[in-house]
Amino acid sequence: MRCPRQQLEVVNLVDQMINGITENPEKFPSCNASVLQADRQQFEQITAALNDAQAQVAIIAAQKLDIFKKMHKNMKCQIKLGVVDNVNSPENLSLIGWGTKRLPTTLEIPGQPGNLKITAQGEGLLCLIWDKSKNGGPIRSFIIERKQFNGNWSEWQFAGTSYNSDAKLTKQPIGIKLEYQVRAGNASGQSWPTNTVAVVL
Image (tube, rainbow, N blue to C red; front, top):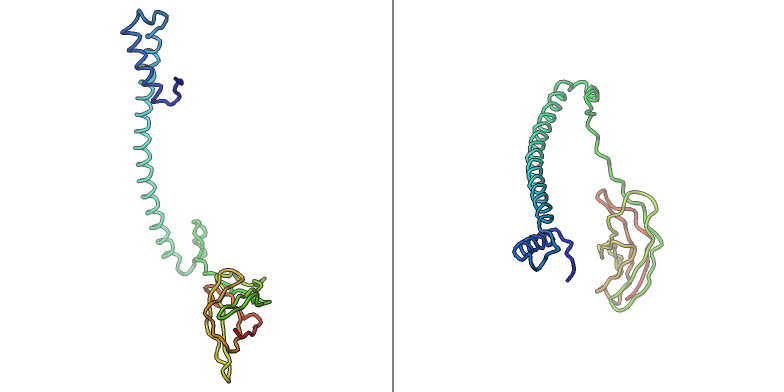
């Protein structure tokens, strides 16, 4: 049998040992239950003290949260009053640590991607790859556009979206001339398109 290490297991075994030694002294003449009883009593006392301290900490933590909420509410109220007092001189708000309202930053449109290439094609299938733009704003997605030639070229139409610099398009028109281009986009708009590639699937 292994000697336990977990606190609950140790306490349970100590209780069993105290009872067994006390009730059967003739079988354990070398054992001293009083030593374990003293330790057990000290453990109970310190456990009770810890429980009381934790309960007190919980009470103080709740009080701290209430005071913080009150302080936060009053802070916002005083800021509003300060703003009203300095409508014509908003720069004065810096004296109380509250700067003038920042203007929203405009997200830059992504730069133009390039080097659009066809990597594979089949019946109604087209695989494309391109280079990401090296300038401009962050890219949220790539928009793939297609136009087709039926005596005249159609307008550019949406053909798919990709979140990487490649795409696999299926169910594309068969037997007619197609052209593809790719734009990078984010919340502010879309970039200039890549070069075009032509194909008949």
